[in-house]
Image: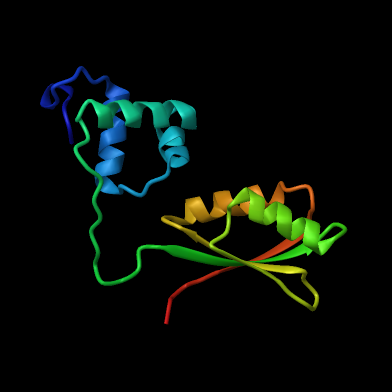
Amino acid sequence: MFAASDFPMKLDDIDVRILSFLKQNSRMSNVEIAKAVGLTEGAVRHRIEVLSTSHAIERFTIETSGASASYYAVVMLKAKHETKKMMAEVAAAKISKESYEISGEYDGCLILEGASLTEVDSKIDRLRKLRSVADTKTFIALRRW
């Protein structure tokens, strides 16, 4: 655990908690951190920028264990009306890693990626709120081969 006295700038308890979360998982989203510390995503983003520019955060790094640290989901979409309009709205939202217009029971197929299941779930929630999406069916990847 960090202490506020460990840094050249004056840190409050929230800054220390943000640093602890980032130390545990540097890919943790600002939304996840915001929920954990009781701030808005924008406030967390601002604090991380201040921590970076003041050199309380020197750099962001990754550690690998040989296995993928990402979580994936395949999401099937049904359009309310026009498939092309739905797919254009999905592409503009920049939620998915890959997007496909498909034939069959569903109109679209998306591949989502996130650093945690919470991040993937958040992306699914954002998709469901799009005006042109009538229905979704989600499959969470358990293992990558």
